[in-house]
Amino acid sequence: MGKPIIEVSGISKRYLLGEIGATSFRDEAERLFARMRGKTSAVEKNEFWALRDVSFEVQPGEVVGIVGRNGAGKSTLLKVLSRITEPTEGEIRLRGRVASLLEVGTGFHPELSGRDNIYLNGAILGMRRAEITRKFDEIVAFSEVERFLDTPVKRYSSGMYVRLAFAVAAHLEPEILVVDEVLAVGDQQFQQKCLGKMREVSRGQGRTVLFVSHNMAAVRTLCTQGVLLAAGKVAFKGGTSDVIDHYNGLVGSEAGFRPKSEGARFIDAWVESLDGERTSDIPNQTDVNLFLKAHIEGPRDLHVGISLFDANNVNLFSSVVNDSLGALEPGETTLRLRVPVGFLRSGNYRVQGSMWSSAGHHDNQDALTSFHVQNLDFVDRHHVSEAGLMRNPEKWRKA
Image (cartoon, rainbow, N blue to C red; front, side, top):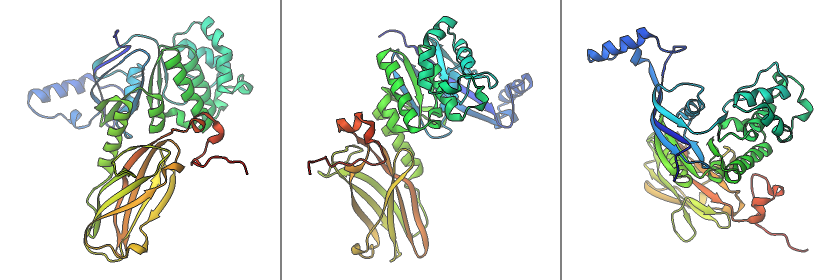
């Protein structure tokens, strides 16, 4: 194996809360003298470490997903890698040109036209004018803003900004393409177009992509490796599926199974195949059983309900435990619900759970459990006409 195209060694990034700009010599001297006296300086009390000792390597041609909850340090890491901000500690080695798409309009001048900004942004990325001219028509066609090409970009919508910015970054052949969640600004069709282009530049052209997203389905489809950040540190790195499983487990441990008010609470939740095997990766041609385990202490009029959400936080359906079960007895109770996975698109799903009675809410868990649906239907994966929130597992027949 050759040298990594990206080497990140012990990167840390410190900010001072309430401060603007770099730390002063006085601040650093105060920190040093306080440490010599074995005390904590006032400066250190206001410190916030957005990144702490982050290390990983990326090989040429890999597509790496950077995942984590809001505030985990993902965007800060990309800004450090893009040399927008300097790390406080550590070292980065980049063996290639970097094109970054971190915020809407990054590298664009609002008073210049779309045409002029293509050349400006290309020059910022280190491209020669002849190289930009050679790719110009492809950039315009991909961005779909040809009609507004000579209009100042300050009059563009955020979606038009993203279209043009991504088209420039993806077509001017940098060795490393860095993309933040900014793609979420575009419409669904353009997002799919961008994901297809990133697949093309990585697998077809051998370029390296770093991709930050909260859409685990997109990460699973596009990325070959992943890095999970938590509180500014690397919590896990490895294959995409393993990273997503750790991410889902982290979200579940932080958002679920916390002690709530007295009366009733969730203890556990999981998904099993119809054969009785616990799983979090499910083919979309079968159904599964969802299990909830709860501890009940008192209320006789207890209600238990769940809601199923997709990766875009859309509530697909809700279900409340039916009255035919009668009053739930005190102690530990396990409930089961069959979930028709055959109607679900491929992607990631989470289960929200609630328990309430006339006395009020007893437990409300945002992420009881989660699972991923694999798409095994060739037609469904390759035809846009099959788009939608749900899929129909039934096949056409002659009348």
